[in-house]
Image (cartoon, rainbow, N blue to C red; front, side, top):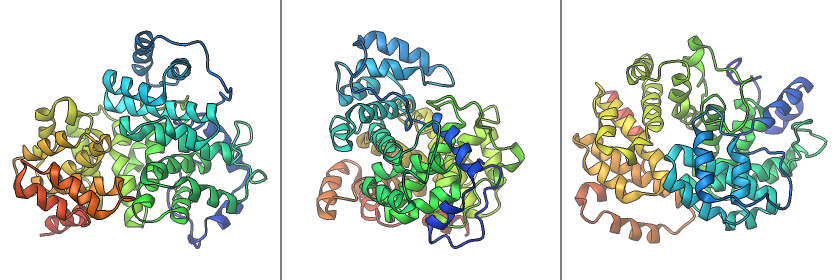
Length: 421
């Protein structure tokens, strides 16, 4: 049932998610129920209203680091429950930001969000004690858990249409998809609910538009990538990776936005089948002949390496700048910056862009920072956002300001145009 078996869209009117929903076989529903058990930060059997014995933060960090060293980090859940007895979600995320890499922080933050919702049974109350640390992972966890709980998804029954009609599922998605961060969490939940790309993506299209829809799409594909990677927070050993020879066709979406969202996480999936070497990833991306997929693939390399931006900026520059083609270098940089921007450490990102040697790639870098910020601040007034962002460019000169003024344009299309020359 998983996407690697048949990733092409069925021949049907995709304008309606709900016909697809009713046409799902009982076998798919039963198979989906197994998938819910392994939900990345979204499903849980812990439903108590109170937490367990308090945990000492220092001891907890030691235990969590041991969990994080393994492929599965589900063993972190009991320790996080104990931390929540005497710390708020925001305090835990601040602790994780200090003690863990950005990737592990994000993974653990999903669990914090899940546990907060399971305890409080109220989205607003759970979100009130989250913060935006760890790339808003607590928010993603809260929203994903809320979606599955309110949709009536259980371990035994999965997505039972007797519990919630397709119209109700759509209404729930619209209610929870209130920002790009919450829509991203809904995307995670939708893939777990349907177990396939087409219906999950169709649901995103039904409930969101613009940047929110983009982040919902990303949540769908990120959930699949997480399930087959070392960042799975549930026992997902039965989830098989796509065959090595089928990877090029995994992202078969015809919609440009869906294709980009898929390609964004494809290198992570490919790395699971290789030695994770940079050379191997580059060779895979070079095998694409069309500009859109090649750009998306190299962008995905940048996304996969984004954690390095804050650890070792000098070494990180070589990941993208040593690539052979200008378009590849720009794509990789755009992916790295757009992913790192979710951690909102903007001064560091602007300094990173300032150090990029190639003028065109430097322009794309600045452009990518401000496009990502515009996505994440879409609910705020444009004049207010522009005023704040101009201050960020102080000391960075006209190239930073150019990137700011272009934030509504599409850097991807700029790269495509350059690649075709």
